[in-house]
Image 1: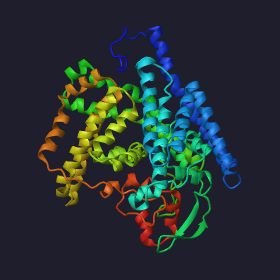
Image 2: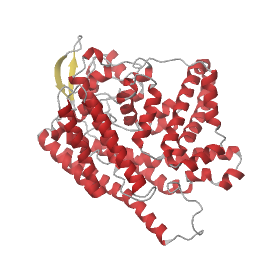
Image 3: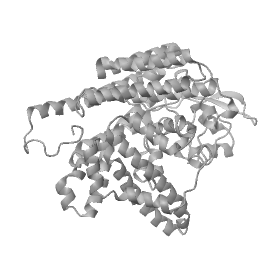
Amino acid sequence: MAGCPRLARGSPGRESPWAAVQSVGSRLPRVNFVVCQLFALLAAIWFRTYLHASRTSSFIRHGIATLLGLYLALFCFGWYALHFLVQSGVSYCIMVIIGVERMHKYCFVFALGYLTVCQITRVYIFDYGQYSADFSGPMMIITQKITSLAYEIHDGMFRKDEELTPSQRGLAVRRMPSLLEYLSYNCNFMGILAGPLCSYKDYITFIEGRSYQMAQSGEDGKEEAQCERTEPSPNVAVVQKLVVCGLSLLFHLTVCTSLPVQYNIDEHFQAAAAWPAKVAYLYVSLLAARPKYYFAWTLADAINNAAGFGFRGYDRNGAARWDLISNLRIQQIEMSTSFKMFLDNWNIQTALWLKRVCYERASFSPTIQTFFLSAIWHGVYPGYYLTFLTGVLMTLAARAMRNNLRHHFLEPPQLKLFYDAVTWMVTQVAISYTVVPFVLLSIKPSFSFYSSWYYGLHIACILVLLLLPVKKTQRGKSTHENVPLSRSKKSDGSENSLGQNSFSTTNNICSQTRGTTSRHSLLKQ
């Protein structure tokens, strides 16, 4: 199929003119993306320096952020960028006309449906697997923002506080945003091309210059006083993230091309390679495929930080933390000892979006519904659906094994180290096995890969689910579901790294001035 890499097409060592044109065409969107993101980085520095909230009105900051975002979109995608305005404009009309009682459902269906139609036309009408302007990427982020805000407004303006979970109560929006605020949130230059998703309340707090205020809470949880701290500089965080970007890009350009994922389905390799070689190459090829995501997401994070957005309080040593909207944690990803640990640290903001709009609101089979929504949101390539169907099995089986086996290996430390080493190896192979179809895109090469492995991990997962008892968890009460408030009275000390990313900036800074117990509960990893 056209979507899968052609390993044997054409004469060896010779590239046809059409292939050369395709090669140049496939690189053009990447060049445009990098150029626009570098421009956005410079614009972010200018925005923080000359349009600081202390001397510029929110109206001006909203307007400039929106105009710059639309300019970048127009430069990258031409008139395809009109889709961003259509999707945002129609969704805003739905919110205003339908009313807060049901508008979240209509916004969800329209935004996701419009995104899906655009993905279908791009993939199946404008040449499957060939070059065309991939305008659906920014639309995926805008879809997240539209649906998140719709649910947050529904929670804040229709539902009663006692009906909300702590995270929903903290993120709830209590008034309808203006059209300018809405467009600024969806289409600002900092996140128009690569995101990441942020909560509406955090974005408005940044635009209005309240990110560095510290609201001190009394015993009853009510705010008693407002105090301010010297505004921290994001320069060190930005430089560090740009260094990570440079190393990731260098690795991608030098190593990734020599370790193609497609080689896993090469007929000669499948026939001749021993199983240890197959396992090793599967791992290293998928490892080599990750730096391009590290580059794009870390650069997007650096752009937001350069504009002054992304501050999340101070650590125990008093150092500023600029990871409020970070989308990944590279060290935790590469050292993951469980499927859940990998997912918690990969594409963090999308995981939070799926949890907020689907998992904690699903009436049945939340895990299956969440993976299905993730597949629809990613696109219409069959490989995406194979990956997420496999991911459901992997997640449920990994959860069952962890619940039944882990407590036997916690003591002594040597046994725990052995357990961690084994689970690291199993997790990395399982992740790589799961995401191969996501990279290959098409049905035939994906099934070719799985059949070469005799569907071994699928069968193993099914056996685990049949043989091991599965402990049911209560949504909203299990450890991985505890998400702190944007303006919470207290934060749960058992929250994990995924949940911590949904703090509001204000509440994080408050924690620095409160008592020792509160401070440790907020900063506990």
